[in-house]
Length: 196
Image (cartoon, rainbow, N blue to C red; front, side, top):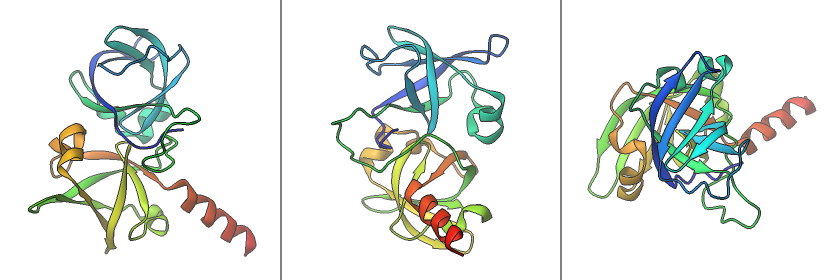
């Protein structure tokens, strides 16, 4: 479980598809309290640390994860948002993020305002009922608030701090991102279906 608050950036240093899909990630994230087998959020995807050394950690990525996430597009040098898993007592500054990606989507438009940036994304049909104005959504593992939803698209606003410390700072029109809907919306939907 995560909060969607990116603490560090990382870069794909090396990919070895022959050895269980190993991805070596370079990052200054402090993993002194992490163990082999600990979960780590990499651009929204919950992955398992299989090796670690100072300045690097390695994860395996399964065929299924590659199929449903933007990890299939990762290459050497790809920048990633990094967050360690939540511990009991940690501040829950964003919202509950599981790292289980619902769908990928892409950036339609980027609008620069005086004090923020508006990003407009395509909203996949099957997720439309889960995304609402002022609701939470995780994009690339970042906890964000939905500004507006209309005509198969939704917008979010990011402040300069988020722009500076996450991969959203360099996002371009057409870039593919990982989406995770708010888990509470999923459970509400499930309950409504059961009552029908």
